[in-house]
Image (cartoon, rainbow, N blue to C red):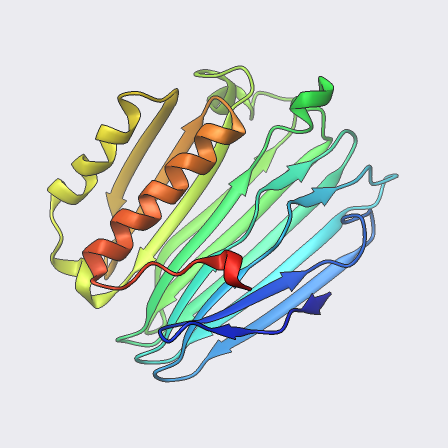
Length: 243
């Protein structure tokens, strides 16, 4: 793994996390631990998709831990994850925020190399996500997807090759936002082959889920969602292409 030369745009530090190889292979284990200090503002992005290659029987693992101190802001905006045919992969994410910290976290999933006629051909794809605010668990997700059972039914019910995104916002500013904030997202569905849902967390944030019929639609809606969120937060939207 490699960190690019960071770029300060006057508001936030832009950092690209780069996998120097052609992707992630069976048996690979990548561990990331990020601490955002009080008052620091960081956007973590990646320049290209995370490709999970055939595993040859060994699972690849991505384990990431984020700690955000009071007054810190972390925006995790990676490119899409693509589990390829016969891959086995597991992503484990733990995020801990002090009171007054802010987070915008994104995770995405493509069905595979769709352009090559490959859709949901991976062996297993699992992810665990836990988010704590002041040591209080406010979000826990456990997903285990495999074409060998019925676990893909929810993804493929709307679109044959669904693209998925999950976004979590935690900010003291968002605690007062009401249902109008969630309803604004539904307007994005009108002219797009996509479905969006949002729910308020028990403390300090929102969980947003998105299914799209193709990768371009997913990308376009994610960009619009980010614009809306940054607007509501009263922050200028950073441009990750500056890294």
